Image: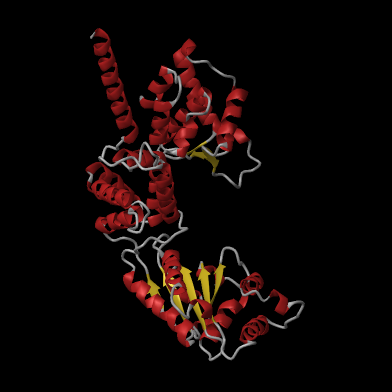
Length: 459
């Protein structure tokens, strides 16, 4: 009977252990939202989607506030590709308003349209890269894959060379392919000699030659006035204007578009949980305060992308959702004052000279001084504190002053007095009092006397 009891007890404990063990194996840790923590593969795919949007590799599913501009531009390019209608248009808007993104979205949609992809050639030029007509022509030849056709031919003018390229595209078929020219930083092309590139592009777009569509992207409102008379007469004067988000609600909608996962994502359960969390995040007062601060600084979408970069890259299996604290930390990192941080790395002597300059500006109600004035101010402080502060000889102090100039904390304003001894050259301080106070709070082992001197009245 005793052995039976011990045997039955042993079997009971073994079964209980197996049940508990199996339960522990089957259960998966859950996140705070009650959703099972996703697999690492899902996290990688989420980051891939969001990083693609933030770094402009992919186009977001919706272009909020650009529906009308998109419709007009899509119609222009589509008519050029399908019916051979040449045209020209300027996309004008501030930097970060979505000009390049709009063009990318148009091309993405056209590539899925039957009969358009095969009939439309693209040429992308940038005024920052193609700084003259010759380099622009070489880039056009390369993108149209006509290097072998051109070979070693010599042309008398830009127009002759450009006409040859267009004629080369016609050969071998009854109808010519349409060409879409996209000129980023369009205003820089107006600096080219005689504006030959723009003249020939607009001239062809107004004639019955090869069907082309010219799209210029610029942030200058007066760009048309930069065109020569003969170029302006051939431009269609069609302009599409883009604007920044006008209200904070629009800004929140853009944020929602950037962060939301598409419905066709692999894990539908996680998509639902993620998108619900994004809605809660954008309703959170702390998160909205961060976004409002960012909106007040700059309505630029790229500025928003910079804010979201760190939170998106911080997503992990243990931290699968973006929290308000992530946005707050990211904004703190973005708002770090570089000069105040650099001040924390200079010597105590150099910091004393910066404080002396600050007092000189307050005393004289001006922003110019020379080394001799700074040295006298420093000497007064060192003599008053006695043994509490180490006093340095004048050559050592001058060396520290020159180092501050090299670090661009101090700038010379007396350019005509190069022959003047450096001790007497007028300079100005490039650091604000608030930056100095901020640096003093974070300066490692800063002497108490120096802190008091910076915040007290002039010695």
